[in-house]
Length: 418
Image (cartoon, rainbow, N blue to C red; front, side, top):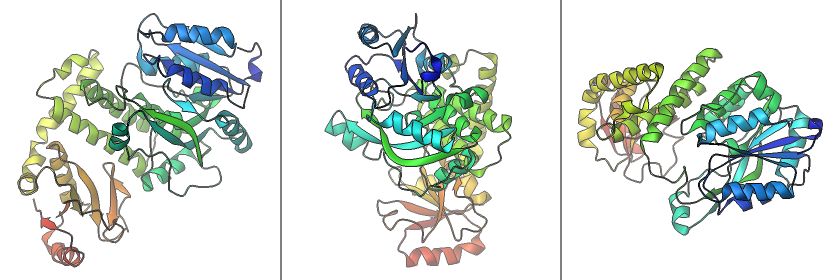
């Protein structure tokens, strides 16, 4: 590592655990950057394979690499925080040890952020799959954004609202580039000891930023492999991670006094995941054993009570649940209290609501509970061709006209009322 910290433009922080097969390619992609003024901080999270030896071997050949060996496994949130705290570069880039970056990524991002005086930059990615099966399963991975974004700096909240409105917000920290002073000044760090910690970091960082931009450049190379966090089947740790993230996000909005439908929408999206995972595990996991602090136990008790109380909502949705087989997707026509009660009932029962339909955009949000809101004309032509069904959830006085419109467009529907 360079003695003069002022010469370090970018600190690349890499937590490392159990990836000896992929680690050399990751490190080589960083060492071959066209920007030489970088430091590479690798945190060995007590990896059980040859990763510690590989890191030390690389550090011996390139002084830009610093290796921190953890005496016990602390998970990614802790390791990323330790890397950020140790960093000396003007900018921070966070990379996973089984992924890679393109050769000019750090130089171009550094020059761009400097020129525009940005707190953070968002960008796109490429994707490689270890097998055809993984490629088929994850074909929907959002590698490249297709939306339109401002070509001048905007606040993080403005950019976040644009992401949400166009359905392209992702929390992938590997597609973000942050000013280190900004992260320290705003005290933006990862929650520790939980899965999905990037949900909270990305949410808080973008809402705190004063100047951000999104550019259409594919600098990050995501690797999809078996037995990674992204490809493992859901487990109790996922429920716990989303559970803690949900409350961290609520605290972020409260602490920073954020008043935004986009922020509420993102929190609602997380809550919907949380409800689905709770329904999956509540009967075969002692979830209370995950919560070891008084605060987390209180929060979990409140959540459990709300789930039992939501039998009220599930009773309202009972005839929809009986009329629509589980394999069919559901769209709710309406955005008022009836529609919202139906959404609660369906999600409490483990059903997925794909979207809300409204007659006109005026006075309606772009999303509800993290689910997109659109008019019938805005829906994709093939949106309901896979056996999906529209459930009309409005007062009976408005339903007749809606039914005529859906009939005209040959959209299958049923009527729901409380």
